[in-house]
Image (cartoon, rainbow, N blue to C red; front, side, top):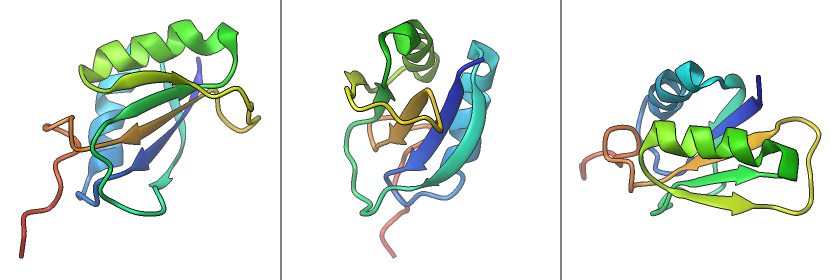
Length: 99
């Protein structure tokens, strides 16, 4: 099972849980969650680091139904795939309503 990190790029509440609910059935093991340094990410990015993890990243992208696939050539050893959730995933990445 690919190790996956989910990063909230919108500031919406429950993003990690909603994302996990979509990708775990696709074979992911969520090992880390957190936030991007600055909210306001518009496009979700599913990032893989090694060519061997591309297929797993594509499965995650398909399970999300939104976003783009990216390859980062500098591998990290903590996770196999990082998902940065943006506003283009309306059911999981919607920003909080203006207050």
